[in-house]
Image (cartoon, rainbow, N blue to C red; front, side, top):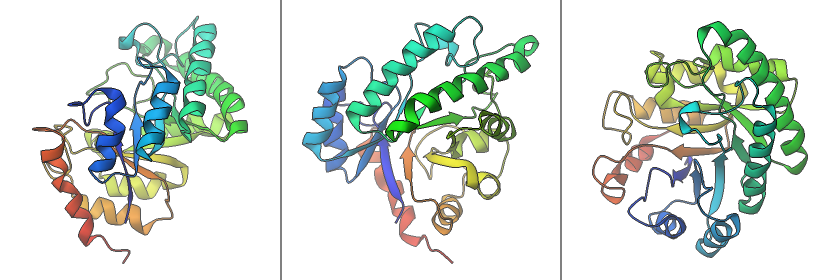
Length: 260
């Protein structure tokens, strides 16, 4: 069986954030992930996770004062801000016991794209230096350009080229929704990029709702992941169509998953 983590920034939003850990546990999840947990003190969230007996698989690094930036790694003149926000995210990851921190690249115009990628390489290396000595793995995610125009890393080829250039312990965050939205077959994309993957997220495409609501062949996707050597968490990061609990029936799709 695949290891499923509930994204508490998108699921269980019927509860206050600190109560979502227990709600996810009661719904059968063994782990959670959070996009931006920074509205609550780290120790408060850590106690909530501990009380629920649930792991925290992933958080995103903070992205600065402007959410529209979609991250700081590529932005000119933002090295000091990137460092301070990264350190804040690292403190949360340590407090929550999260093994992964997703570093968003940010938006970069076409004229500044190559220079922006250079900055992403430099700042991911900074993240690796800070995090990996303490067992926290920085991740880089490719976001599809239809949803996130001007994002600096909009395909897996670019993401992996950045990872190779860092020469450091940074991994790929593989999101089935973004892969499909890029026009890729998610199973073929998985087979190609699996050696670089450090974390997986899922949502159906194109509505970004729970698996089984749109066009992704989830049995094929789950079989591909299960048949590989991937042993990490699979984060359910989707927008429920009609409430979190009523939409959890998609997990029955895992019942037919095999390794052959």
